[in-house]
Image (tube, rainbow, N blue to C red):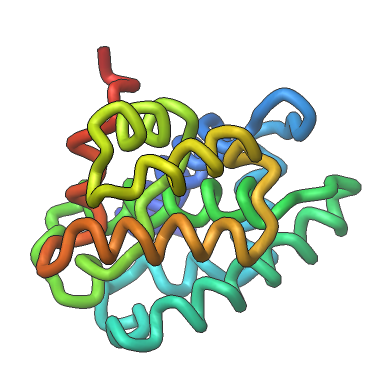
Length: 178
């Protein structure tokens, strides 16, 4: 069986996602991350942005993806929160789509950005959108502990704080590259 660019993209995106989403209290290997992403069926979407939902459907689909990832993680003996599941999904799609040259595609523009403490810290420090209280509350909870409602509140406020922007653009506040 030939090794394709789709295989290559999936492996890289799974490695990036598994590395980023594995945190204290929820450690797992890159191989487990790959198995979880495959178990949730997300690699089927990575082939083209046309496989992604329309922008107005992204939140509903993301909730379903998180549920699928959580169930697939349980099959690996892992207990994922919605925050950890979201981080795995969001980094996977960031590597495959946003940084894969599709950043201006309308469906890719609506993909959720990865949420972590560095992003939340800077959103609060800069009072992005005037939502310092939301960012500070999210920081107290910690992204890796988010339940579905807590995660969706953060995404909703990012969307509200940056109207007309691609959601990935909130990462201008992420300081993890430093």
